[in-house]
Image (cartoon, rainbow, N blue to C red):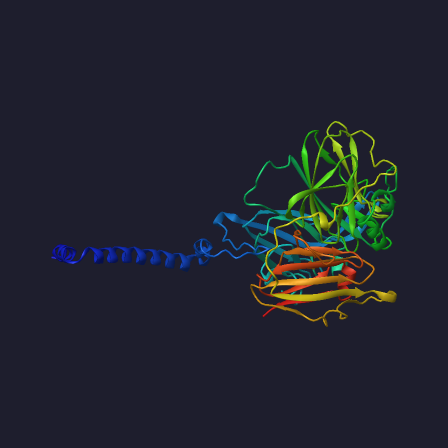
Length: 510
């Protein structure tokens, strides 16, 4: 009977109505499939919308790709106190993750879910901030702003999607001068999901620390080089001279690379012909740092973990506190060479490490030629994506303070928490015009977002993507970010003395 009715309908209906029913059925099937996809995976509609609508953003929003089930990366960190040897005979009371300084290198692939279980064995609270990572606001580690501090004896589990790819790092965000400044920092490396072109033959991660009021005995010895590392002699013109004027007297008793002072820093071994990548992280407390490798040219490929549109060949690389740089060199000059901090006093206080070619372990250390001039790379050399759109909202921020010995640092004349919040709405492109009216460097860091440098000294540029920008005295920059990560976020100077003195403001979504 049913077959008879279908045959009758098929015979009686006109051809065009049969087509209507056919395509209608197909449409219903497609809609049903889409509905099922949306109910199980809310982000599944993105590829379809992208076919008809492609917004232009100078700064790409964080990828919210749902990771595969086998893409969970789990880590355990225990926060505690240790006695740490910076150099033979020089032992300090320190903080540590898993009993080591710096903390263990955590590695994930872009899009992985990262789960970090933290146990606090201190007698004081602590948190962890994931510097440069687009974490949800509740995972950002700012006490009382994004999470309650982890109490003594307590624990907390951080969970976030590893994005964007690049050299990131993690550090304490409670009592920062003591906790971060005495050991609580480590590298987080987010590998890209897909890589293009040949990769380096060898890689090293270097986390620089800065120590004040250390205890113990022993003097940090440094080899005799042609010059002492004075920036006036080694870095010629422009930014080099500016950094000399901006740098205050050395405000640390010791500098470390991966927890050790020179010459106790373990040498970096390479083989002739290799292309070597160094991931440099300034995890210090106050000082801008600068580095050069004797006998070799450095090629800077990433700033703050984000790839430059074009790599930059540089005699020296500068890093404000919190900044990172990926640099490469080709091992073409066999011997034992020194990678050295160039700012006055830094190398003399331990900021150096040797690069040793296999088979040349017994060679004497070779440094820079007398009178060598090294040009540092500047932000003006860095290129990023084409900047096309105008901002939806603009704020002008003047950074100042520290006058006549004052410990107060201000944004538009106010110290945090009295600074005006920067109100944004989701999806807006926000421009910050920054002007440093003080006589010291301010490495300004934005939590939870990536920004682009779009103006230098009033001149529009297609600058790099970053999360930390160092303004030298009297410099002016314009940066933009897309408000794509709702919450309350800090924008602050990563010089920890300036931050404690109030050089902070909040980004608040409305």
